Length: 168
Image 1 (cartoon, one colour):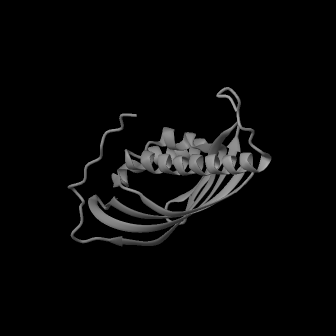
Image 2: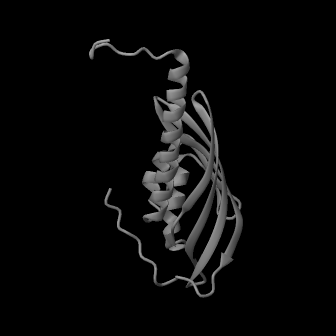
Image 3: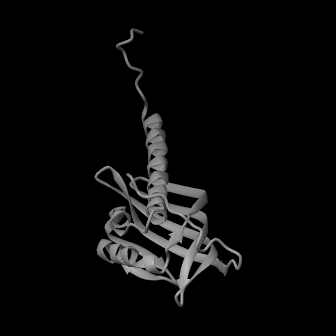
């Protein structure tokens, strides 16, 4: 075999490669979602990660359908949530062609503004997410968020937190 010849990939290898690439793209998409949350609840960037008719839903914080509603929610939330730091883990991603369903767990230290006072909270979150590939790019179709617990941490970090400015 010369250097200019290529090794042909069979259909099975192409399917496996597509699955690996899709898994990596979905993981990156989720990490970008958390990053945009943690660097100032950047609604414009967060909304762009969703399909046009995407859904963001949480029993405590609301149900938002469509990019505009998601953008408005996040752009208005920084007064209520001045600091958050998502620590995501335990992803399980199931891919079927151009759709995927994923589960994630997240430990979230956050500062919440309550009655004019900043309070430190520790929140454990379960995510149930749906994704779709459109035009070769993966988007979030639905984020369903459950707070397993949301507890105040009395001797917490409120008032001492810092957020690295977004430079990307």
